[in-house]
Image (cartoon, rainbow, N blue to C red; front, side):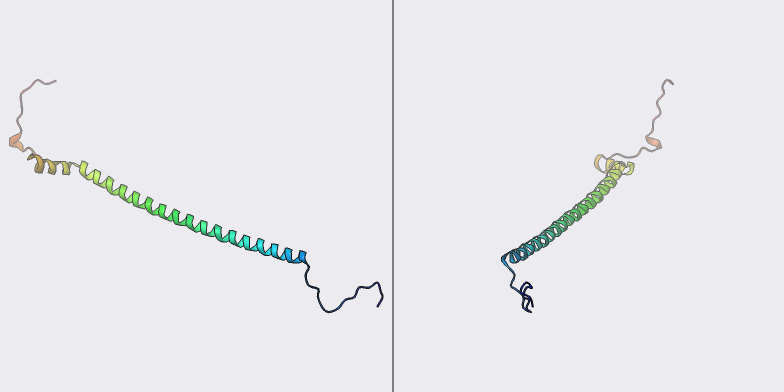
Length: 107
């Protein structure tokens, strides 16, 4: 062995303060990144839940709108108007004996 050659033994040196700091910093960065990913996933799941609730509310609103449109059509129908006029007002559909033809001038 020459005096200029460094002495190498089978044992490793303990890491210095800069190596420990680098390892600690790396661990902090890794944990921060994992925390950020978990936070983003939670936010995404919350957004999906809000979206699903909104879709359900929209479907209910559309069903209610369809039901209201059917009800409006029924209430505006002639058959409903005639039956309501009979029950509420005592009106009836005129027969041949109820019709009187008045003499008049033709236009």
